[in-house]
Image 1 (cartoon, rainbow over the protein chains, first blue to last red):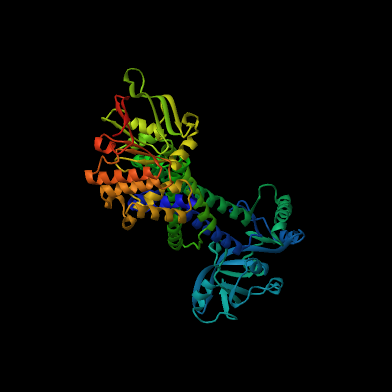
Image 2: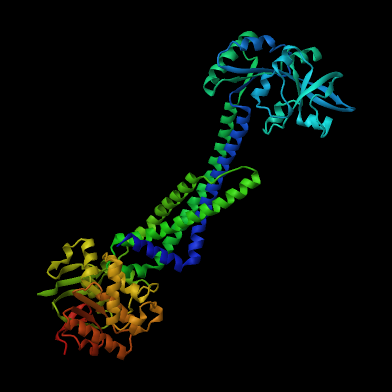
Length: 389
Length: 227
């Protein structure tokens, strides 16, 4: 008997019992569709979170006092100078925050003012609508220059140009050096102030000599761990154990990935159960089929079908159910992936490997669950089978 | 030269009190090219005997030589091969597969013996022609009359050119005229050299055979020429 004959027989049977076929494969279809959707959407989510975090740069490290409310007597210019000696560091930017009144031409808003240096703009890959970021000279000479966020600019200037105009910060005149574009990152709002002025000018204006945080970037991802180690031990040496908090996005990415992995495993397990139930559905219908077709099995045996022929015939049917269900599941999974991605707002592609594995898995399910009914059929005694009504 | 040789054959179903002796101590021979009719009332053991002769069932006691081969010594696969290539079955209720067309039914034994599709098609066309069913090839059994169904079954039995045909009440479900046609086909086959064992309870049908045995309660009670 040829492979083609097995396929032909199975297909024939499935087409003759269309309703039964549809009902039988539905379990597998749902299982595979949900498996593919879960994997594809969570892959998409992972890629999106990675992208977001990469906007900040995975090479970036935040150093900040562990007690954020505590005495502000940590992190000053001396630390920045000391950190410059650490090898593997690319940029160092201190940040210090204060709320202040910003006013221009009668308009007045409350804004976060960030005192920083020119390096912060490189670290954050800032884009500008107007002008540019602060320069080294602005810092060195404590110039009264300010970079506005897009939001602050629109509140004060509306649609007119801000570059070169003078705004007041707590009554002191500052020249607008640039306007930054919105940072697209979902994390932007946690960290970015509404306007930036030179850290040196900030000290004159608000009298604060300690920083809220220092950001550093490493030259490369490979240098990252060395940089973290060296800079932390340098600062801990000065301020004592436990005084500093070190935040690095590699860790954040790892955390995000872990959370997504757990999500994928849990939902994937549910989909796996659906596949299992689908498999049991196939087994159930195959047992019924074997019972129904006992006479047919007897006839086939009388005509010279061996046990392996009967086994093959019923296994092929079970396999067909499973693979058909699997393929349909891939199609529906592709649709639901598209749909749910657009609802959640995640860009996701159908994971080809997930599609392939799901079909392979459902084929395995079909064979495993088809095995018992097919074996039963193959072992039927031809005389008893022929006598069966 | 014997096609079939049976010595002291017995078949028992069940055990102890519920034990049924379907066939008791039967011995018989059918020559190559022979035509044996087996008669008997229902429950006389005819079908049990035929199942054993067709290697569908195994005797409890006694010996059965098929073309000088001891069937007891055959592996299950060899018995399958025997049923497929050397024996053709014709049943009272035709036993056609209802979902397959006449042609597909005829081709089925060739599927199991691994005949290539082209060759199957050629052979089934030849047999459809021979049995006068050429214009019924793609009909399902449900669309055929009883006589047509039995002719499909005969074509199917002949498809692998068997040396023995076992026919169990082949006319039992047919009217007398159609039944007579079927018997004519069997006679013609026998004249071409095929050995035939025909089970029937109709004397008129049995009279077409060369030899006759009559069974009662599992034993041979009468033996001789058919006429």
